[in-house]
Length: 81
Image 1: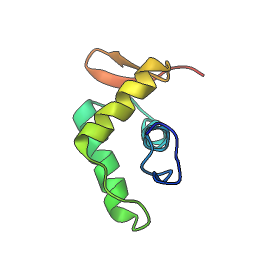
Image 2: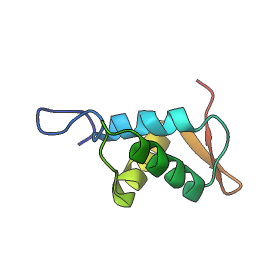
Image 3: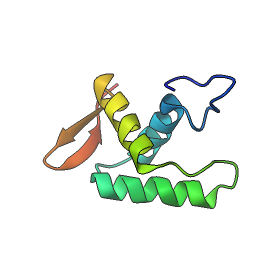
């Protein structure tokens, strides 16, 4: 679930979705704007499957738990590496 396995492709694993979200966070975004950006990116790329909203939230939770993102004044921001 977190890491890819022989049954879960890298673009479906939480770490893969989380990495994609970090790539989209070039500037602070609201959760809804980030969700729209991910859906748009996934729909324009035929190689990746759509992500359900619950999986998106789990990926955000994972990124928060590892300290990669923070919520500040209603927006999601990347933390300094």
